[in-house]
Length: 231
Image 1 (cartoon, one colour):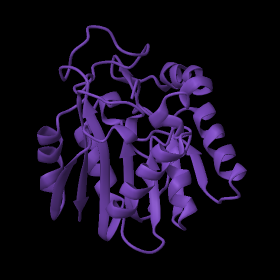
Image 2 (cartoon, one colour):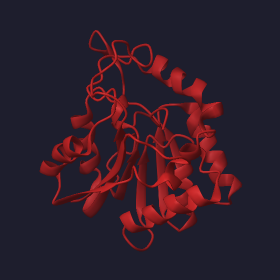
Image 3 (tube, helix red, strand yellow):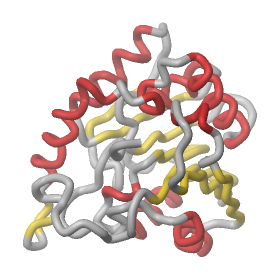
Image 4 (spheres, helix red, strand yellow):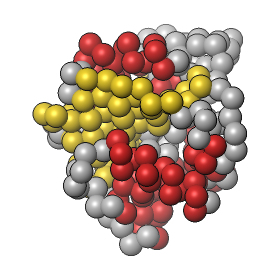
């Protein structure tokens, strides 16, 4: 994937600057779905993501929080099989596209503009928190993980679909004005992410995804994977 689905709040001089970061992703929104694994326009790619999500999520309809939902492609797959989806993204234009995507399919979903690292859902608890290609955008990924696990009900599931596209922390300049220092700027390896999650949950496993070209619309050589954790 060529970019994260959403962002946590960037900081300048200790102050949060979300406006510039939201503008960055707003500008990316019109062409975002052109990437095969973003838009899931190809039937085989879409079916493969649906198959994996079915295996990772609990059986039966669940309340799912899709953090950094982007244009809602995974949210739509989940809604299609009866899950009750709440998507959160900092970019209003991404959220608008997510809403339209579900409406076009005759599906129901709730989409909120807000910080994916601290979603604006109050005290609500979810059966699943889902995150795809978001961790690299967060200035404090450990705090985000604690927040997400805290939003899960008993026996809930955390699904993190991530990868490592460069050296963690690499890159001298932020991806967007005001993004600040990002510890996982180049992505994060599966072992490091699993180690960060493990103290927060009862069980965690890693599922490699790099070899499944159907997911990405092409063969890839970098590390891509899912961390699936139960509380």
